[in-house]
Length: 244
Length: 244
Image 1 (cartoon, each protein chain N blue to C red):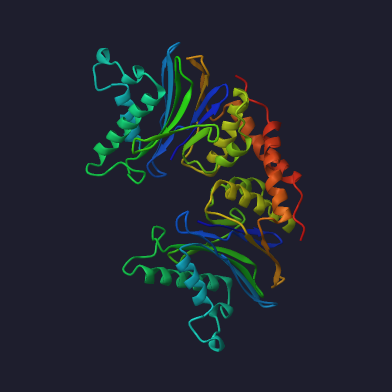
Image 2 (image 1 turned 120 degrees about the vertical axis):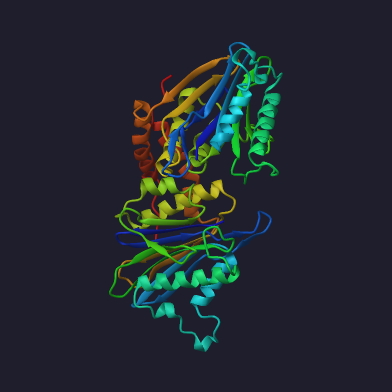
């Protein structure tokens, strides 16, 4: 499995992804699931993947035009006029990759070759936008009521996102929120694992604000992981007990 | 879907179940998912069900011997010599019901007619025991390392159970824990819904300590539901922000 979250704040976008892939619990590998295309001052895209690894690797290779000789590559994702067109390009490419793996079948959420994508970023002259793209190639956009997307193993880490997210929160608080959500998921599910990739994008900067890999022994992650349990217990203790 | 939790404490057993069943979001009904067999001073059983409603209703009817005329009924679950035999009886009956619905197919977690059961209770002269029974008819028992079972929509409500459960907690605190876990699930998933059924069993009492239906407007549930969000936010705020 996988766990990735893309979050829309007033001040920008926050992305976090894990790095574990597995084909059964006895076949675990580490792969990056976060990809970026950045032309400073012009456009910044961040893409995160969940699903069949062959599908997502092929998707990213096609988007980067790795079928061509290095000198001939001119990825069309760097040419699209809008974020909407970028999402369409990713969606079409994704659908075609899945269709090729399972000829005769429509790509769908049931396909063994399925993948789901979070795409966010900004092109100069437009707002930052955040999309979730389905195996069928269609997509939805984040809005005020649904300001974040999760893909992969989404359930364990959802309650804290729902409760603690605020659109005007700082990047520093948003990273904390992501880490709590990832910690809850990692503690509950073996198929999501460290290290994590984190990326911050500040509105209108048209450049990556910060991109870090958070290793298992990261002091801040360790602090959150160790103290969140205590903080939760304290919160739990602060509520009155049931009266029989 | 469904959400049921059975919890083993030092002082007894705690059970909670929701009451929502659905065949699609446009076909929602309310059904009890908690069933009891109680012979005060001799044996107390509590059974909770998740899965296909036709399967679980048939299972309970068979266990109660409703195939017979009322005066001839002598449910064998009231005759079994041990909790282990009770779990075997429930497991065999469950497997047979599923097999009858899908002739030629083995009952399995993939079957459309599948159901999963939590069974707990005590027979005079033995310890209280708590089992989870699978569609195939086999079962596992709770132990010190795995002191609770969840069935149905288990993921949203799991992190708080993992973090705040203590074997020596009071019944009053355990009910609070259950309510927080159910509230997190109900807020996240439409297929789990109020009212809730709650049952407490105190070790060696060989009788039901308390059994209540918690309605949507229950003052304590409302208090927990409203304040848990704030308590979580406070807990979240008490951790230091990430430093960029």
